[in-house]
Image (cartoon, rainbow, N blue to C red; front, top):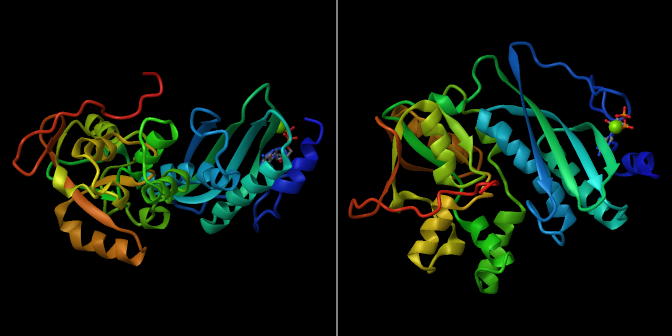
Length: 319
Ligand code: ADP
Ligand code: MG
């Protein structure tokens, strides 16, 4: 790309934090605090698949990092630094200005400095790859495989709104402007419970972030932990944007809707008060939605104790 180095200098270079080597050398370098493990995760966002071409680049910049911070949160890790790889079909200065502002704002807010990356021209379409690195006290990372029979199942935040916006934007659902505004914010500006999650190691057992739908993502915990789960439909924290819509749409959006970037985690019932207090301290909401049981698979029951049939479990990229 002709102006590759100028672009990097203009949009993605910030002074490296103290004791770190950042943008401008062959490798970025920093030390982990002693007694900690490195937690790392990477996510690709493809134009037309993970985001619409006309999405606000500022919001896209925020989301590109947020979805990665969400993975660190699921491990109970705190962010240390990130890398950004961009493949761009052309140099669109307005797009780059908005995108980098959103990305770097999110990076600052979560103390996750951008310390390197790669920038190249693509044949067509934008591809965004972000890698985050975080740290977690040694041996204490939250895993999908640690749920225990009798655990409470919790979720942070509210469910279903991002799915509503996705249905609207892909033309399969009509929405009034108020609902659209509320649900679009959930889709385009997700806010994973990053600081709350760093306190979960030692309190929670298993955790996952909800990217492909609660039923499917909780299913990963159940499989890895070799147990089953029972959820009460009435206890699912429904996003306000869903109020008054048909029940089957509400249920599908809450249970199978993706792009949530909130956490589902399990914890012993002795942790209830402590978890509620922790959530309040971090200005987020948590809800208990069910429990881990002996067996396998997920059962969702309604007010009458009748099991719910789920037509769609969640989003499968290769379906
Ligand atoms: P190399 O040729 O060694 O791979 P590059 O020329 O690709 O290095 O990149 C120069 C410097 O700019 C490196 O430190 C790299 O990490 C950084 N960099 C490249 N693209 C980005 C980006 N999109 N965001 C942040 N840093 C970047
Ligand atoms: Mg390079």
